[in-house]
Length: 254
Image 1 (cartoon, rainbow, N blue to C red):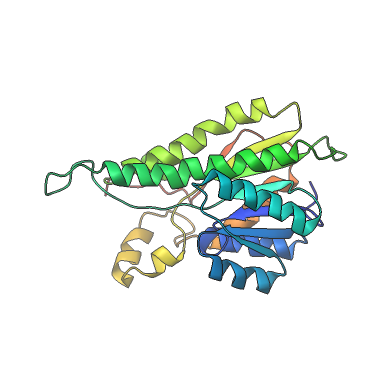
Image 2: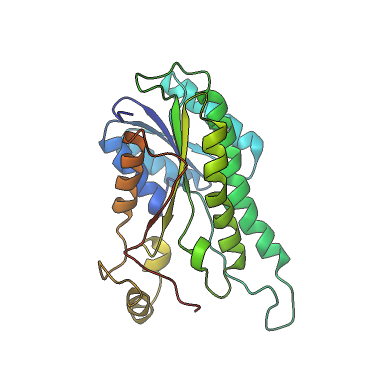
């Protein structure tokens, strides 16, 4: 699928990997709608890239539905590209030092990372199905964000790893389900990237994290995530896959 002139939805597009993806897709000629809980920052980024923004709580089905339809109204056509980057990375043990259980944290992470992804994807796919097929036979492509933690999650990441593992597990059945209308579904599982969360850490902590990255021996650049998203969109034979983007990292237990 040629990016130029296509409409793309990017959730979590106000910061981190989502922002880098929104900027890269816009540079490649796509009309980008940024959906983010932080409406003010979403508007700023959208203004800078000539896109559209919508404040959106991805865990709310009505918010997701409204965001998809408002994107269609803004650009005059449904989005053929849906990239789900919205997520949270809260870490907590299932039983804390005080002996308290962490069910609330688990529920919140699942709601944002998994249900939020499913919500937006559902309404985006519903709209894609009404689009005419391209010359390739495609009607659209969905790219969800898993994590290297889905395979090698660390201590305290049970909720996060569960949410990202579910996103990875959805790829193949969804690709099979949506084969007939010509909608591809893939996921990217990023490793350690230079996002705002990483930037807030002390230098010595970041340096310790980087020691786990064989090559390139550094944190990932968010633009590299955006570039992979663009390649997935453009490569019509990529379907049903979870692609690790991590410099050959395997996360240690801690």
